[in-house]
Image 1 (cartoon, rainbow, N blue to C red):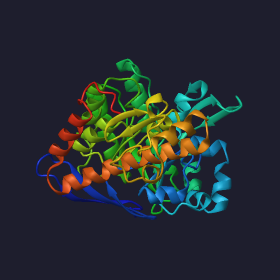
Image 2 (image 1 turned 120 degrees about the vertical axis):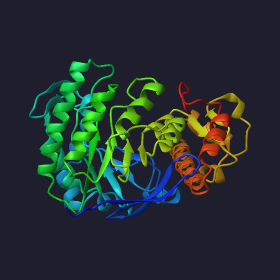
Image 3 (image 1 turned 45 degrees about the vertical axis):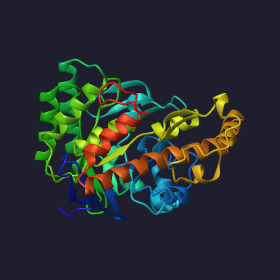
Image 4 (image 1 turned 180 degrees about the vertical axis):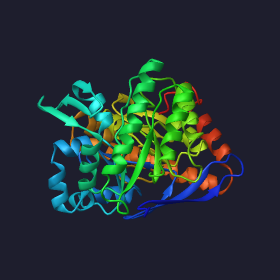
Length: 381
């Protein structure tokens, strides 16, 4: 099989076994571990491509479900693919659309053929199948695309989870058969199985047996379970995946979970968390969680985070950012989003450096201590 995506491990930390790597894509090579900003509707909300470059973003994610509804995959294809449509010279990844169908859509009916549901925009009836998901993603043209899966609810019974995983595996085989741009777009398989160790291991093994995926994702986490349960889910999934393959933990963005994932050899992460909480005035900083609307910042003319190198912290005070937020000015959401994204991207840079210097365990412990975190029950930001 001609591969669009290749991955190489560049260093393994002698202290912890955490690793750095290089992910080679049609639109360039990026270092791992990395955090991917989420561009839901072919844009990272409030952020320009130039600002993504400035914050050293690597891969950027777009949502298949949202791009399918608006503007439509045919429009994006006519523009030359997502990167040209967005004016973004970076590798991109599209999800399969499944998570949005199961979290946003109304009145879902899951059958072997696919899922019938109501659009969250206008209530119209829609149908998404493995074939349709891949056809849309082929037209969107991202470097990395995902197989179509069900994101099961949590908690779920063993019987429901086994049936769901069996169907997800059959859907994965259909995705492989439908994928028409092998060598141009790398297809990833998604491990599901909820909290059940044997089902997760089974799902991972069966995906590997297909010998058709250029990477693997861990799905169905951060959906209401405890941190302890989530880490077990990750461990169960990773146990059956090839060590040399690139691993992607879907939808996780709290910094405690990022560092715990890196410790376990996860290479890629994404989440809407940093931009979503920024729009509500909550910031990730080197001093811990900061809520910009507090009155204590009214006369605070210092930077948002004195240890941050982002555009926001270099140029704007806490007092001004508080003013923008309280006035509901779009510039405020933009500046706060820039900071939170850069904070997580910089955390990945610092983690990579610690791994290369064989001190990732010390780095993680110091970060947790500084932020008063623990691995199991912290909020993580």
